[in-house]
Image (cartoon, rainbow, N blue to C red):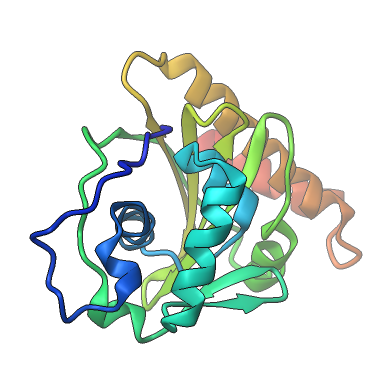
Length: 212
């Protein structure tokens, strides 16, 4: 999942683009933002995902802020509307494979927004928060393992939860499955803690998982 960011500049890039987009390093960050359709993300999440040195990433994000591509937010960084019109694809190498791990119905009377809010920004087990994407289809929350080898996405859409993994070449499916179970276990604990939901609701959620 980690990727070395090229240090050379691409002379073929459009000279009319902002200066930050002429850097291969900046372009690699923009490529990841576009590939993951990120709405918001954290510094540490991006660093783990890309394997970038903290000082290098800090300078990149500073330039992107100056160009109005990203902006600081209470929970990290937010991608601006301007970014959608100027991002340039810079392939990072072989794209990691996507592995669907779980699709399940959610109890019809749960507060999905509440669950999403509880999950945003959280670390648990080996999973570290990257960020999230939002569109008309729903909200997707994203985590990466501490060593950057496995990414887990959880998409909440129309009363359903879909969990999938992205793994770097050579990684076993076992690591992705273990990470997904850590996520599901955390979601179950959120339900059990909610003052609005008793043990029956937690049992209902676990039943949905068993039937999915």
